[in-house]
Amino acid sequence: MANKGWAYAGLAGVAAIWGVNFGVSRLAMDTFDPVLFAFLRFGLAVPLFFLVLYLKEGSVGVSPRDALKLALIGLFGVTLLEILVMYSIKYTTLANASLLNVAPWPIFAALFAPLFTKESFTRRIAVGGVIAIAGVSLVILGGGEGLSLSSDNMKGNLMAFSISLLGALFNLSCMPLMKRYSALRVTTWFSTFGALFMFPITIGSWGKVHWTGLTATDYGVVAFGVLLCTFISFITWNAAMYRVGAARSNFFRYVVPAAAVITGYIMYDEQITSWQIGGGVLMAAGLIWISAERKLATSEAAKQ
Image 1 (cartoon, rainbow, N blue to C red):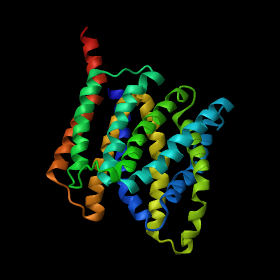
Image 2: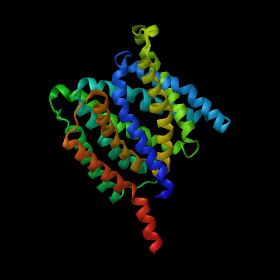
Image 3: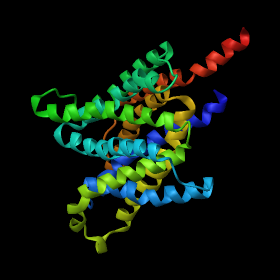
Image 4: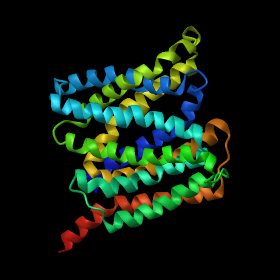
């Protein structure tokens, strides 16, 4: 596991950044339409992706056939996924959206991984996943909002659940491409296509922003979204995911709601309950159990 330690640390760090982004994005929504803010995140990151890609690898191209695959990944994994996230929050409770968005995602990734890679769904992943799911459920539902199965929320519930399925397939579809290209090149191209497909949806939103009146906070949240939440996070996540496998990696998404709860406490004085603290500990135990698999397997092999 030692040589994969950076990958596990990267996955946990990126998930924490995405959790903090919930609080940062709430600030952004005071100024920017949600879809416009999502477009700014990816659109402004694209030149950075291409610049770093060219400086690091000396070229930026992909084959026409792979460009088509990356266009589809960008359409479904960036454009459609970001829109579904926004509207799922609008049409159901935050607890529903968080739980249905986050909890099933790693399960789908683990179940469908054999179709894309040589990964197998092991008993250790299953046990650790169940423990982590229990923990993340306590983190989300322990805040007091509770899970609601009301018919009024069904549209948003279905959207949130579809995010988990779509997101898992999005991650897995990148894995075969990263056998031929670097994580940086794959991320650059699907982000580019995702931003291009998203742009027409934002046309009516640009005129609603008082651009000359933007504050330092506005620029700060955009910079956070572009540099940390998109540019650095997507490259790190994809590189780490390719290193340790999509099935194992996606369980680290359970760090997102925990980080979001802590961010809410720091930025908005939202209370953290004992149930949420216990859920965080349980979730961490599940993730440690999952990430320890390779280390245990290596030790057993050495004894033999």
